[in-house]
Structure formats: C-alpha cells, structure tokens
Image (cartoon, rainbow, N blue to C red; front, side, top):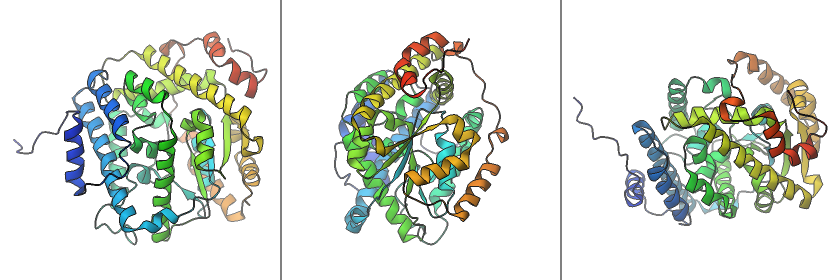
Length: 399
C-alpha cells in the first residue's frame, strides 16, 4: 500500500488558494479581480458538474495550476519590470467557428521559423518553473506538456481524430484566457451552466488585458532564449464574441476570419465537447451538450455580426474554409499581403513541409451525426440564418 496522501478533490476557495501559494512559495497574485470569476466557477463545478472522482481531481488541479501561473507571472513582473515594455506589434489573429480550418491555417502560417507562435506547452505553463534551464536548455514545461497530452489521448483516443494534438505546436490563446477564470474553457469540459451564464454577461476586457500581459511575458521569454520572431500569429474561435474588445486591447491587430457552414461545424463541435466532457463526468445528456454548443456559437456569431458592422472593414480578411483546404499556399500569400508582410521562399517551403507532414488523412476520420446531438439541418439553418446570409449567401440547406 502507498503512504501517499490522497489527492484533494474539494472546491473550497480558501484551500485552493492556499495550496497554490504553498506550491509556488509565493503570496502575491497581483490584481485580484480573478477572485469573483474563480468563486463562481468553483461553485458551479461543486454543485452542477456531476464530476466523477478523476474529473474532480483533474478540474481542481487545473485551477491550482492557473493560480500558480498567476503567482509566478506576478513574481517575474516584479523582478523584471522590463517585461511590461514588450510591444505586441500588429498581431495576426485567426478567428472563426471551430472546425473551419483555423488550426490548419494558424499552424501553416506559424511554420515560418521567423514567426512568433503560442505553443501548447506555453499555454499550459506560461511562467518558467523555478531554477529550470528555460533560457538555454530543455525546458521541463515541454516534457510536462507531452505527459499531459499522452494522458488525454489515452483516456479518450477519439480526440486524436477530432483535433491534431501537438504539445510543441501552436495552439489557442483561449488557454491563456483560462488563467483569468473568464473564458469558455470550463464549459467545453463540463456542465457548468451557472458559470456559463455568468461569464456571458461579464465584460471580457480584464481577461483580454491579462492575455496581453501574458503575451508580453512569453515574448520576453522568447527574446531571452533566442526564439523571438518578427510578429505573432494567434488564433481562437473564442474571439468571435469579443472582437471589439480584442481590437481595443490590440489596436493594430489584423483579423482573418474563416467561414464554413455551421450545419457542418456545430455537430462536429458538439462531438468534440462530448469527448472532453467525458474526461470529467459520467452520464451527461449529449443533446444538452448540443444545445449548449448551439447557443454559445449563436451568441458568438450574433455579436460578431454586430461588431463587423461597426468596426473598420480593412481590419478583417474573410477566408473560405474550402480555400484553406484546397489552396492553402495561395491563401497564405493573400493573408501575408493583407497583413503587410511578405511570404518568403523559406517560409513557403516550410508551409509546404507542414502540409505534407500533417495531412488530414494521416489522422483517423471523425465520425458523428447531427441527430445524435438533437440537431436538424432546418433547425441549424434557422439558428444561423443571419450569419449564413452575410457570409455564405445562397448556400442552401442540405437534405
């Protein structure tokens, strides 16, 4: 028998904050505006999520890790105030519904070694571990990220068919927003309706301000370790509902929006969410997952349409999913021209290598049906009518 202490499974705020402080050996979280969203999330996980034992451990550990990140980040900012002088200049954001080619597009663009990309291991652990050789050696955060991805795919192998998991590859900055406790990450992994409704009504500006700060911190780390590129290529579907805030916090950003019929994407998103929910909970209703996915992305696209009417058109480039898949290099050239950049021969060659090495057919097919999640073609067409009319005119409704 092991004498190891059992892993904590409570969602008590005081205990969780204390554990993070003890682990980090630090006390200063910086701005404590995160406390209210944390409190709402903890209540929702405790009282609504119906987590199984492993899910309670995993969800709690994820929260503790985010708090440790905040402590270590604040410690670095205190000791290295020059971090806040880092300029995030003219970042390129790829946005669009999930399953519209955002991952392919971002990773192809970021295959250029001169580009800054936000890597999965950096998302999960933005702050260097104490006394680690992160400047000039193998960063232990990378090996930790590999272990996390292995554990996820061992638990739910079908996730490999849904998303190309790469611990050292570019990923979404929603994973940085997660550290603010004001993000859509929790609802993608568990039934947290009170938290989900609460964040929908909140001003996301503090979360985006912290995202900017974490990007400054990561850019400083890239500079310190000799990995600094010329500009950032970022991406996340979560920005669809926050475009005006995004452009207030990143005023010189350029936005590439990908487009694909929601009748194809929303069932695929629901399938992915079901696999993620099953990592933490048993016995959930797949139709409820479908309902929540549909409502979240109707909300996001309605806000997107409103913002696009108000924001300058020259800040956006619209790209069809079919062009991302069928004409990726031509699409990349178009995006570079939009961003005022040049696609160099070496970057083009790197993009071609990426496309050859990460072809979709090398992963298992993702199988699902609309009906499994309570969807019908006519119902989804009605729900997303305004978006389809604006960006996909004349597309019709499949049988």
